[in-house]
Length: 161
Image 1 (tube, rainbow, N blue to C red):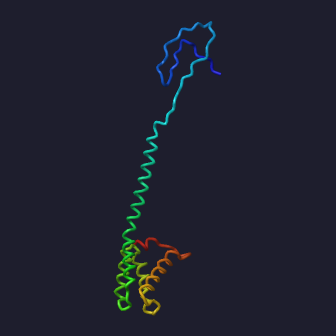
Image 2 (cartoon, rainbow, N blue to C red):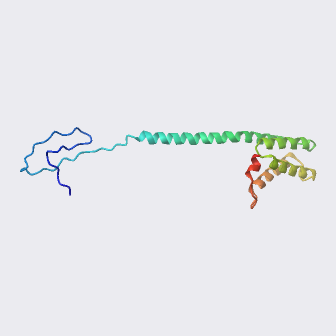
Image 3 (cartoon, one colour):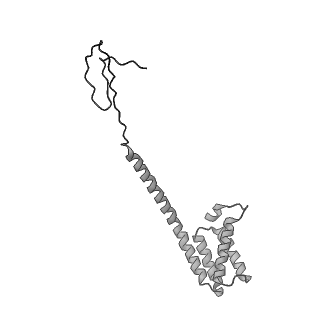
C-alpha cells in the first residue's frame, strides 16, 4: 500500500485548481487523504456518429451506382422482350439481327451473343420455335444454361469482350 503524501506536497486534481499548501501538525492523526474526482464523459460521440453517417451514405451511393449501372442492361432487355412479343416468323432474320444488337449492347459479349443467336436461328429453321413467346422462352433458357452449367469453366471476360 502506498504511503500517504506529506502534507507539504500539493495534490493536483484533474478537474479543479490545485489546493493551497496546508499546514498540518505532524503530531495530529493524519486524516484520510482527499480523493480527486475524475469524470470521463463521452463527449467525443460526434466522431462515431459522423463515421456511422459517412458509412451509411457511402453504402447508399454504392447501391445507387450499381442500380444505375444495370439500368442500361435492363432497358435493353426490355427492348428484347418487346421485340420478341410482336415477332412474326416472316421477320425472323430482322428480329434475330435486332436481338443480336440488343444482346451486344447489353454487355453479353460477341462470342456469347453469336452462340445464343445462332442457337435460336437453328431452332427456328428446324421448326422447334414457332412464335415470339417460344423464342423468348428459348432465349431465357439459353442464357440460364450459360450461367448455371456445372463443371463448365466460366470465362467472364467473354461476357465483357
